Length: 100
Image (cartoon, rainbow, N blue to C red; front, side, top):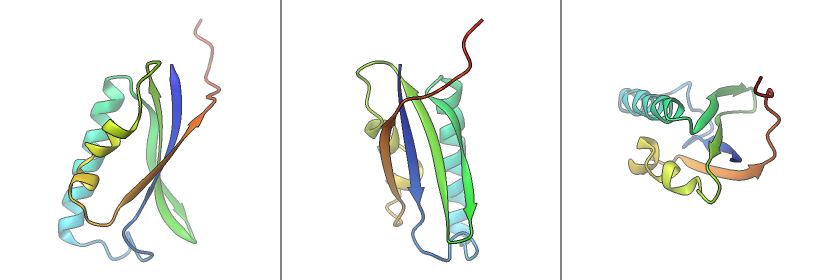
């Protein structure tokens, strides 16, 4: 397995305080999508980080050797909607509980 740290940047500094109804629907679809990926074993954890300087989302992926995160990110509803969200991702060395 390979692991990736992913950070979702919001479309503006005031997000989510001024989230629109359309964006609320989009964020629900976004969360549902990543829950589905978690169910498939591709995601370890994901969720919003309420940093006072900038709210953002994080996601840690675990993918089979040779698989890349870009296709999963590209299929995220917030990316498909082209509403100003942006992902960055980086390989990581994950420290996970040992399987007993």
